[in-house]
Image (cartoon, rainbow, N blue to C red; front, top):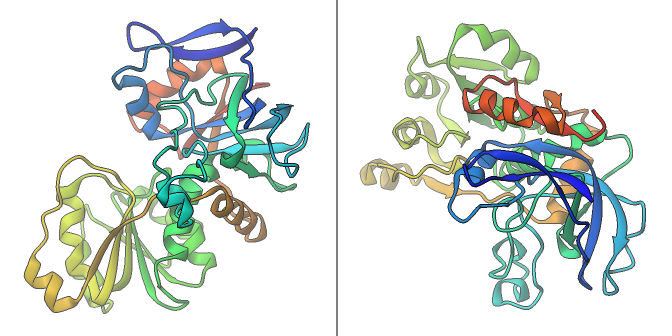
Length: 334
């Protein structure tokens, strides 16, 4: 038996004991050491058909059992991670093109497959990430989602060293995006709210801070000549849509915040400025390993607060209220 938090009939998380699962031929069994808590977990927990689902998709642990068809690169006792994408099938049309993040047979950890709010977890071999020595498990966990999403988007954006890059939203994703953007050599502008975080964003890597409580973000970006890239972590379309006017000609707006409302864009400004609006979806396990390697090399770490399994429900309430700076991480031996 092992301890896990699953969604109860009331829609809340309940601490229970579960039977140790049987692994299939392409899976491993992981003893979880740490699991990050993401804003998306709130949606997973409150979603439909989630009864008895275990959330959590920023998982670090060690392999304690191997399926018979698991590749030899994965060993007993090896420290591995699992992110949102549960592992590609290697058979569908997307996989055959090498577009593993768009695999049509992929599960989503914590959503339609049990995740890491538990002492043990099953994982498909194609979803595994090797964790480098030198990264503590509690620090590595948020990098498998918030870190991967921001690092990958910046790396593939087309922006080059010296370009003006703006980060909108200084939270769980944004505080990592600022660090990555600085270490990549961009001229980094943070867009947030409140004078209280001005010094903090500078320490994270921002060269310029635009406080939207007292400044017009678009006007300030235009004074700087426009941004080559605006990376937004905000899901509110009414806040994101106007940003297109803050881009330089041929500049790009990349969306990481998955809001439900449609964007409202001026087709005239889009055409005249030759702007690009693009979404970015996390990345492959290989991309995750590059994110971790760069984080270790550049000394980038998430700002975290650790909690035990027993403390998760309280942490979720604080996460819902925005009362965390900047990520909660479940530490199994806490």
